[in-house]
Image (cartoon, rainbow, N blue to C red):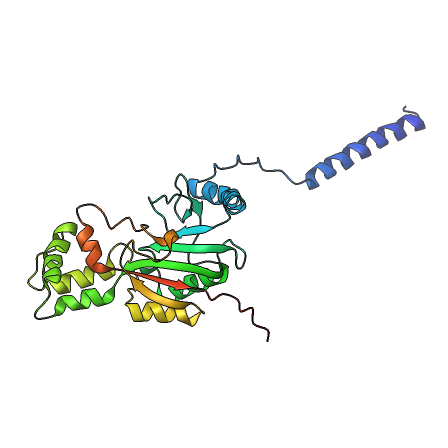
Length: 261
């Protein structure tokens, strides 16, 4: 016959075991932790760009930013794009630029703004104005809508006639009776193009945010040494077609007046 003390000891053991089992049942079952997925090239590009931008801004007194550089690598410029590439920093031209106010001296883009909607283009121009220092300049090269409209003239210039033939051959576009219609439609809808400007419309967008001294120049020509010889499409066998269709526009952010108010 078990003693009283023995029965108490057995009950204590059973009670403790029951409590341990109940506690264990209440503990969450931890799922195995997944291994961290490898970072994509774009995510790695975005992550590394902050240091690239910081170093460029620190090491250059005259700060020059190229938007949508693609394969271009301008010497002495911070070359940026939304796609990864050696020697590039990440910058989405439709979003706020990663620069302080009044911190950049030159901004350049070649065949970029036509890939943005009209509203995105306005946002890009406004951001450029914000980050440019007083007296800073922006230069944009982009297809000129007016030049494509001129192709419909009943008596086109010799330059336009050569373009009507060469442009279609260049891109292997259809040889339809109205070459101007084919060129205009495909120019506006190909390569992700979203909005094409003429000089007046682009100039108005620049002036609206505060740019002044807006002027059209030929490719690779500028009165400012920092803005000369930048366009890279103005070379090679198809340079004459680029010359026909491209306009280059410069604008300046006004300098702060030192006159007492």
